[in-house]
Image 1 (tube, rainbow, N blue to C red):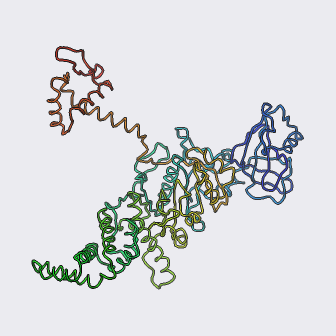
Image 2 (spheres, rainbow, N blue to C red):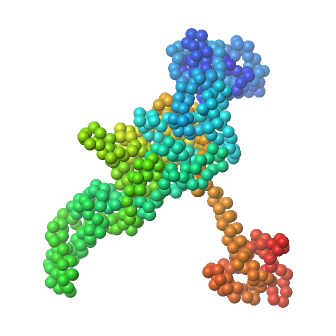
Image 3 (cartoon, helix red, strand yellow):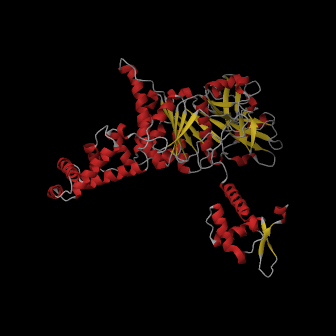
Length: 618
């Protein structure tokens, strides 16, 4: 392998007649003046006598052709391999044409592509096209994982990619971008498995109910993560303790149902008292609104005068006091709007529980999966993230501002899929402000973000700018690719490859490494509960229902539909607690016949009859 053509300090062309070049593989140029220079293949082509060399436009110019001829290549007869090699570090001078090129040894490149040992970081996958470097690779880097590719599990053959999670203190936050079917959620699953291995406290907001780790995969390296994570459903397992809410908290929560006007915000500020429970606040709003709807102070006096009993009289006297104190500052439409939003939150069960299980699990170093609809998670995360972030912040600041430290609250990571729903660009949401604050200030307190989205263009720009490491899976939309090019060091050549990446392949742009790595995500140790193909699921359910129906009617076969159908339907419904109608029953019979479980006998004086199929009898 030789350097050919006119060279620069940034990149060179290399040619070979024996060895084809692969994208993103590493090679060393042995320059007589500057020594060994490490580079990465960013473009590669093969030529032979059937393909004129001048058809490649700017990839191969006349200087390359002349260099090849001068070095003894027969460009009109031989197959020639040419690659563009970009140096990881710019050379001081242009490279000497004719310099030798060789494959590096692992020890020569270890500090650049594998600076973190597997035991000290997150083992996420393998560096593509690095198998030539593994011959002298240390044993601690070998036999760590398998790779799922072409519908089979294959043993690791390349250098492992290990993410240094400790570097997040200097280079905080991770973005995971990729379109549907790109492997984004799969990559996120692998990252969460690694975080569980390290016992790093992590909060996962899961609007799709897919981040469950109960089902093992078929990987031979699969592990049991039981005891390392907890699943909590909002309203069932966790919620918000109303008594702990501040005025700011309740304002943000009410804003999640529908935007609060300034007048509504004033109603909350005026009527809400910290420490009050839900029922006392609800009753205050209800009583004030009832007094306002009564039609004025004179009407309220009438209600008091004509009260049926002392209880009703006292009730209207309380309403009168509220009316006199708050009517002018709290207009009835605004009170009604606050009351409607408060009732909606209560009906969704958000105030049924508290976040104590979450805090306890975080302190135990577990990964917590918070499940619920997108809107419920938006409501809950607005409170939860504020509470957790301030708890960690107060603990860190107490070490410097107080004589007595607060109780220990651990550093933690916040993970969410569909992040553009929680921190959208162009408009405000209650959860956006806290995510943006953590993106900008969280590093100082040990709070970090991992944000995954199919549409990076729709993610808040301030937040996107703080994501120092980015995992870029297959992306097709031009607007998203443009955003990725603006926010990462991905090259133009690499951006052109984004729409064609194989599922599970990813470009990882790392601020610490200062370069982009081409990585294949390892096989996950667990699988999603949604992994089953929906059409296989449809077939499976249909077969199950048909088998059940066959068992119901077996004792009635042979069966004459025209004679005793109604009696059979009535008996089956009563015996098996079913509710088949006449039409449904006939459709099920037709399905069983179509599937070959039963068949029609020849006609006789009673008409057609269904009998058990011969294979079923056997």
